Amino acid sequence: MKVLNFGSLNYDYVYNVDHAVTPGETLSSSNMETFLGGKGLNQSISLARAGVPVFHAGMVGEEGGQILEACAKSGVNAEFVRQIPGKSGHAIIQLDKNAQNCILLYGGSNRKITKEFVDEVLSHFEKGDVLLLQNEINELDYIIDRAYEKGMQIALNPSPFDSALDACDLKKVSIFLLNEIEGGQISGETDPEKILDVMMGKFPDSRVVLTLGSDGVIYRDKNQTCKQGIFKVKAVDTTAAGDTFTGYFIASILAEMPIEEALRMCARASSITVSRMGATDSIPTMDEVKEALKG
Ligand code: RIB
Image 1: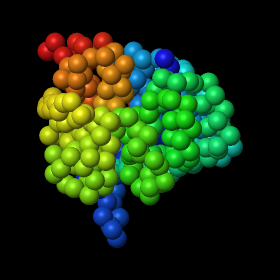
Image 2 (image 1 turned 90 degrees about the horizontal axis):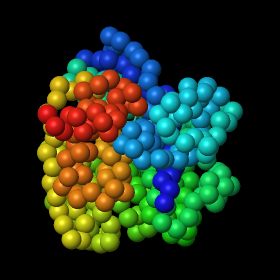
Image 3 (image 1 turned 180 degrees about the vertical axis):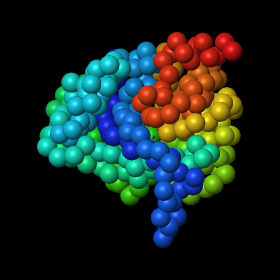
Image 4 (image 1 turned 30 degrees about the horizontal axis):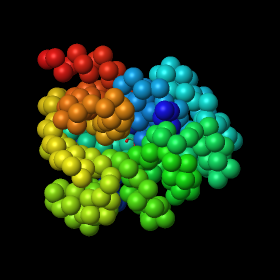
């Protein structure tokens, strides 16, 4: 069984600010750094660092060489990442004094996916293989339909939540990984229990992982509900915390780990990410997570 992550690859321009800039305001930043990120790349690197061999599919632009090098260095198989003319995707991230972020995306090459490219990539995968998706690339609905036809198991992090998801047949998704904002947008509810009730009503055979920021996470499927709190750490940068959770969760499902144990491991992994700067750079290895769980 193979794991494919079809997703975004970004340069992240991170600006340290007192607070996120408000409409009409001009604000100076105290520092600026460039990191590699993108929900897709972060989740592939999280899977790889959790010990899962992962294929990443996507597009980078002319200046995307550093991203390809990062894939190679992190053990992410990038044979399905194409380098095309034009700019790579990027994100402008404001990181405030409480380590909270605001993210503005520029799609660039992430939005140049073609149906032909999707068909080409999926021709290398088969029934039972796992497909992980986020919502930072185009042709998401087409990818879901073709992968489902092949009998692949589809996991979706519907982030950012926008109208592109309206075209997607979400009944074809077996695992949803979403935060409370996305959960609210998908269900029309704000209370986590109600969000999960609506999700299970709409998608009764799926597994749902609902992350709740400082309130931890709730998992639900048709047989069980499990909760896990956060591991408190000094937060430096919350970017990629959710992506770390997603990669580690898929890894734990593949390892057939009991859900309670899986959630604990994922929460510990995310807490390490939060304690470090940057997106891909901050994601821990499985050895680091196991060591931290002993403490
Ligand atoms: O989830 C964090 C990621 O969202 C960042 O790395 C940024 O690139 C955006 O895609």
